[in-house]
Length: 79
Image (cartoon, rainbow, N blue to C red; front, side, top):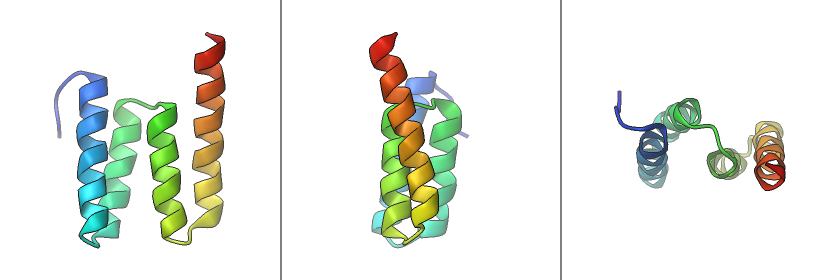
């Protein structure tokens, strides 16, 4: 478990997930993206996870994540 403030933890998990993905360990990448979202759910990480899911041909899941990203982005702009 990575301990830090939520933004740093999310960034660390995000970077780790990308490394797993680049090395072809997509199961670990998926798990790690989910950890990033738990640490700091924000528009960017939902978008990145959606992109990852799209590359895995998991289109329905990707759409869900991208819709969540959009909703959070709208909330951020209105807040």
